[in-house]
Image (cartoon, rainbow, N blue to C red; front, side, top):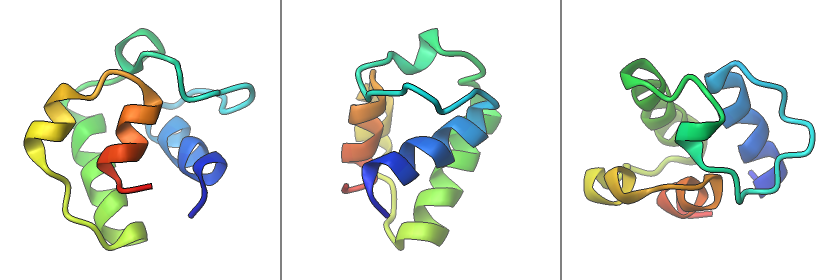
Length: 73
């Protein structure tokens, strides 16, 4: 999975339009980042990328690029 596909997958979780996402957007500012979204993100990373999410890194993630780093992209 490349970053544009990753951003599209995260946008689907957040129920937003992926058009124009650059990675610099703050997750909490673009909407719907709640406990269900976190669980969906962890499940997506596990199923689609085969990685286990580090909870501390996820907790410290601020931007979409940070989430990509958590997903080891």
